[in-house]
Length: 138
Image (tube, rainbow, N blue to C red):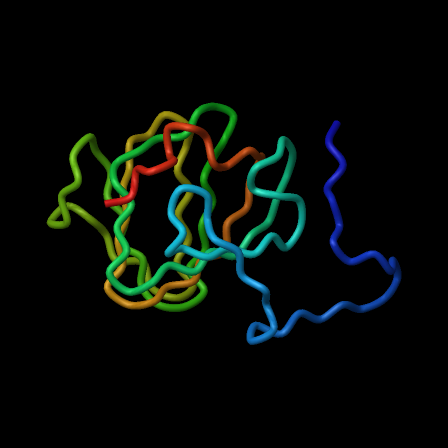
């Protein structure tokens, strides 16, 4: 039903994107957070894969995503703290280090923060950045 946009135009060729060469963009509603669309786009309907880089001290206030979006995160580097519930409460969060996976279904109220720069891999069905998320960072 959706065609995944492939930023790599030469089919049949091996494409390598070195981390240090990624051209990061400002995340909508939180310009201190950076992202890179690997395939598809976070703001369009359809499947996407993205990397997201959050600076040390970043906090995303409680929010939830609408169906059909499942937030699928894999921590690449750093530590992302994730909490579930209607109120931001660091005492109730879980620390997710490199390699950890979190899948958050639609409608689940959640929040996150990190003490060190953290990079996550996110994939799902877009759009990922619904209006209720914009400006929900603390």
